[in-house]
Image 1 (tube, rainbow, N blue to C red):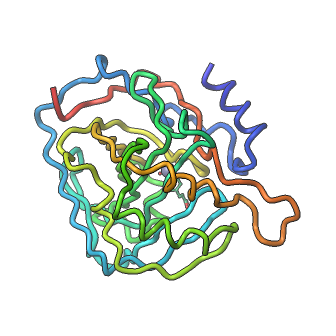
Image 2: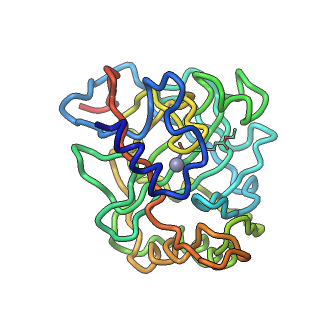
Image 3: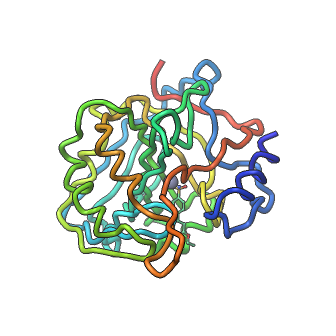
Length: 263
Ligand SMILES: CCOC(=O)CCc1ccc(S(N)(=O)=O)cc1
Ligand SMILES: [Zn+2]
C-alpha cells in the first residue's frame, strides 16, 4: 500500500529526517491525478499570479533541492484567484527530479510520470504574518505544480541553470536577483487541477492547496543534467551523493476530490 512504500522510501532515502507518517495524515501529497475522476468546477476563477522579479533574492541548496527564494516581507509577488479565497505571497520555488528522464515528478497524471516537477510556494498573507506560521495551518499555503518535459531548451531557465554549479553542495547559497518566476509558467494557466494536500517533505503538514497545471513546460536534456550535478551532501562529507530522485511516493487519495478548472 502507499503507506508501506512510504516506509520503503524512508529506509532508502537520506532526505527523510522528518516524521515518517504525518500525524493523522488523511490529506497527504503527492497523489496520482485520475483525469476521468476529477470534477469540473465552473466556479473556479482564473489564476492571477503577479510577480515582481525585483523580489528575487537568492538560491540555496538545502540538501533536498535547490530553492530560489523571494523577499516575502511585502505583498509584491502575489497569487490570487483560482481556488484561492485569500491573497498568497510567493516565498520560494524549487524542483523535484529523477536520475533518469523516465521519472522524477511527484504528482502523476493517470500514472504518467514526468522527468521533473516545479513547485512555486506561496503563503496566505491575509491570515498569517509569516511563512513559518502559515505552514502549520490548514489554509496556510498554495503551491503551483508544473510538470517538466524534455524538449527544447528553456531560455528563461538558463539563467538559473548557469548559477547552479555555485550551489553544488548542501548549505551553499548565492545571491540571485531579478528573476521573473512567471517565465516558468506554461502559456495556458487557466487549465489546472486543484485539491487539498500537504507538503511533500518534512514537516509534511496538511496546509497546502495544490494547483497542478495541465500544460507542461519544456526544458532541454542538458538543462536537467545540470540539476543532477547538484549534491545532497555538504562540501565536508567524504562521500558525495548526487541530488537525484528527490521526490516522495504517491499518497492515497483517501476520499478527496480533485477539481478541474476545465472540461
Ligand atoms: C517549518 C518549515 O517548513 C518548511 O520549511 C517547509 C518547506 C517546504 C515547502 C514546500 C514543500 S513542497 N515540496 O510540498 O512544495 C515542501 C517543504
Ligand atoms: Zn516540492
